[in-house]
Length: 66
Image 1 (cartoon, helix red, strand yellow):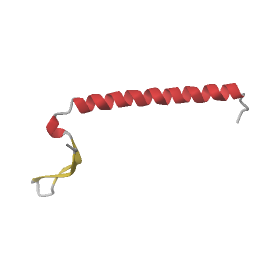
Image 2 (cartoon, helix red, strand yellow):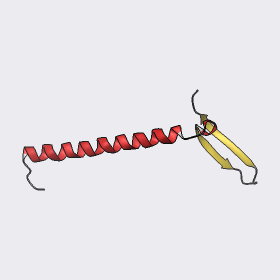
Image 3 (tube, helix red, strand yellow):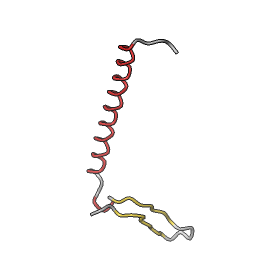
């Protein structure tokens, strides 16, 4: 490990913090946009699956809170 000055360490950590803050903001915006573009009847958190017999069985572990 190299010896870095205090100013270099501050610069490095502030750069990293800015990067992660900006990434978090972009991901938050994308998630919001996806939520807004999802039809109301698809807004739930759950598990959808077909049973082995081929009959469609849908289990919703939890619906989106009203």
